[in-house]
Image (tube, rainbow, N blue to C red; front, side, top):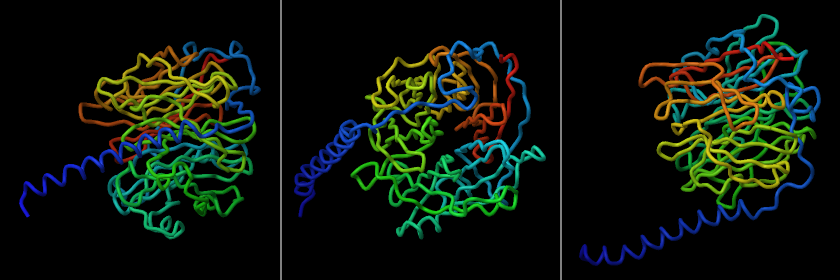
Length: 407
């Protein structure tokens, strides 16, 4: 059989495969658009507001607030673990032993077989982080799911209305991150006594692989923290990454049951959405931009997540890097982001009252060319703003700030 014969007959096959892939991607996009939005009211909550409907003009603008450093450093790593990335922070109620829990993935390097999800807690009694320990491993996750897991990645933590910690973790079988699924786990030994020993004993069990697409539930990933709702539920931002890249909002009830999903943007170059509440039903989504010379992109909903509209890009450059946003109170908005147009060597904390105009509030980290400070996370706990971020892909750094000038 000649080469020309093979080439002649291979070309139609290549076209058919390519057309099938394009059709599949188009159908996935249509699927996200056509699913009905979750029913029921969705009103956002703020961690530092007197009431869910506190008027925006009763809170001091963050641009008039002074950030006072209260602490910082590096979160302890599991022993003999050289790599760390993609942290998630979870605030715990007053009266518990820990103010904040941190989750991140760690191992010899990203995508290595030994990568697992580590956790540490910030103890209120001594104002220090506990020793880190593993809460999810690739092997144990695969055993619970009933199929092989090749790699695990980004974790996101949430506490449901019963006080259980729910954990959403990116996991893949075959393929790279674009073939990932989102696995939902929940704390299995709940409730726990309030002690460091209890934290070290925290265990998780698989609830399910989230049913997010008909393509084996693949190519949807999680990165940013959920938006708390007044009904005890939450909205979890996720993103589709296979070919087209776009943000999706998942609605959960107070017990962690998935209620529905809706696509947040018509664009196809946006990743890793993070959510901000401007009013109970008016929210912003800010996204990582994969375009050359990109900027932080934006979308909004004015009906509690039922429908979304694209907004003009922010003036802030985005070097294809993850961002983290938090509304600590109405009109008090914070954004951790890489401010350089072409690298992750500078990490800033900016402030805004409307989500459109941002002012530098604090330079979090800066290094020489080639250095990386990335993948930030934000949370409000114990009347202060906490931030964590990846430091050189080898450890998770953290900082804590009090707000001065708030009335």
